[in-house]
Each structure stands twice: as C-alpha cells, then as structure tokens.
Amino acid sequence: MFTKADKYLAVILITLAFLGIGLNVYYISGDNGREKSVAVIVDGQIVKTFPLRPGYTGEFRIDGPHGYNVIEYKDGRVRMKEADCPDKICILSGWISTPPQQIVCLPYRVVVKVIAENATDVDDIVR
Image 1 (spheres, rainbow, N blue to C red):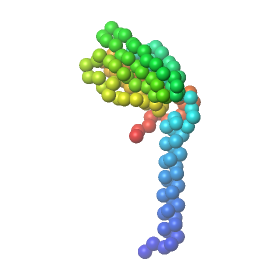
Image 2: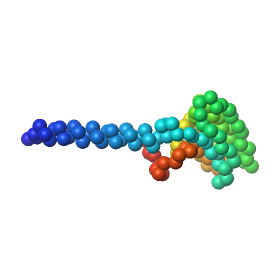
Image 3: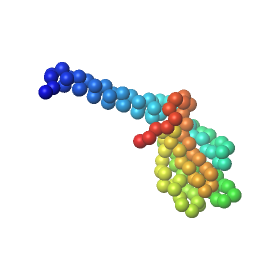
Image 4: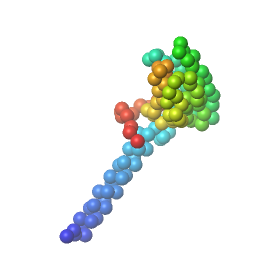
C-alpha cells in the first residue's frame, strides 16, 4: 500500500513540523535571553515599571479609592500577593514571567503585565 519512500517522506515531514513548533515556542515565549520587565497599569496609566530578573526582589502596595493590591516580584517572576477585591481572581492567577502574560484585577482596574524589551510581532500566545 505505502512504499518505502512514502514512509520516509512522512517521517521527514513530521520531524520538520515538530522542529518548527519547538523553535516557535522557544523564540516567541520570551525565554531566549530577552530583557524582560513588568509594567503596572492602573486605570489605563502606567504607574510603575521595573526589570524582571533573578535576584531582583521586593513588593509594593497600590492604594486606590476602593481598596488595595500588593504586588510581589522575585526570582524573575511576579504575582499579585494580596488584594481586598471581592473575587480575588487576581491572586489566583499565580506567578507570571513570560511576555505577554498579565494579571488583571478588574474591580480595581489594575493590570500587571510582563513585557519584553525586544518585542515580537506576535500579538498573543495561547498555551
């Protein structure tokens, strides 16, 4: 039914497909040595930016008219540590470290977004 050449061709095409997927994940994911930073946006305005790299550790609090958010960063990643919003979805988002990941606290209009210095031409990544 299938010749030996058909089988070789199928193996080569499958190998090339997986190689292409692997290279895309590596180059688009932001883990290829690009300098990363975090932008904290409140009501559409950037209120703080800081580099996201290992050894850079700290936390800060954002107070707003409705409540507060505490953002923690360490070991090249960032998270929403505390918030007094009603649903706490922003806290459940956990740690992020890869562009264009973001944490959103919708009730207080706070966005914590990982950005890369060398932006790619990709709008979004779905994992």
